[in-house]
Amino acid sequence: DWTAANVIDEQVELIREQIGDARAICGLSGGVDSAVAAALVQRAIGDRLTCVYVDHGLMRQDESAQIEKAFGESTGGARLVMVDAREDFLNALAGVTDPEAKRKIIGERFIRTFEKAQADIIAESADDPNAPEVRFLVQGTLYPDVVESGGGDGTANIKSHHNVGGLPDDIEFELCEPLRALFKDEVRAVGSELGLPDEIVWRQPFPGPGLGIRIIGEVTAERLDLLRRADAIVRAEMTAAGLDRQIWQCPVVLLADVRSVGVQGDGRTYGHPVVLRPVTSEDAMTADWARLSSDLLARISNRITNEVDGVNRVVLDVTSKPPGTIEWE
Ligand code: XMP
Image (cartoon, rainbow, N blue to C red):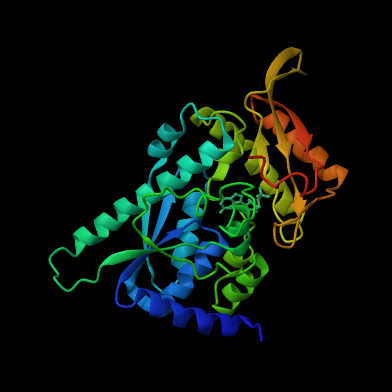
């Protein structure tokens, strides 16, 4: 019988077998997947787990602070290390426009950052000859991530998810991925059963590579700032409209290499368009574009063009998946 409680018992047992007496680090993204993976591993190995949150500078407005706060409130005292890697990621992405290249670079930077965190943890216990080795990296990889990254079973590579196909070849961690067989709705059920707060369990998906794959063109600090401001308006309006649970997610995409002419006040503008990509879905394997009300769309469009200098056009993506994917890159 599939029940969340059974999955928890089974996975805790498997994690104990896999990790044994060693220590592990868990890459935490703030989303439900990595939070549930961390909670399972904590249940299995207790304080031998250290969670690592990487601020790669590709997060949305105020997000890193919110994640730190939610983590403190929701975990039974698991240890969290916050790493500021903003400059590192931005430098690595300079000049890069190809979507798969971006994904691979981000995947690699994540691993290099985890390796640094691992070295720090090892250094802390350098005086203790009995300190268990830090060998495992816990990830919240789901079944659809594996399938769409070309799971090694002959399926096509649609896009390299940062924690699967985007991993570097020379990774020395052993991976612990307790959610690898699960879909998102199942992960949410497991998260609830584990007692995680609704705020985390029902958080809309946000991709590991963050806004880096929502800027079509090179990722720069200025472009990130522009996208962050447009995205914050969309999220606020969606929440105010009470749609957070009905909508799977609503990526906002900055067409950074496209410009169009506009007029505001009595001046000409030559700015960038942003795309709204609201979708409904069960598991992200397929999706439909969400029929948002025209009032809501009008409000979002007005606010973005009035409040975000540099964006002078808002367009709506009305493509299902397939043929479109949810994210543009
Ligand atoms: P696509 O664009 O493939 O997205 O239709 C399906 C779902 O996966 C999310 N996504 C990712 N999540 N790392 C993640 O953690 C990634 O590299 C990644 N790429 C896409 C996307 O937001 C959607 O929910």
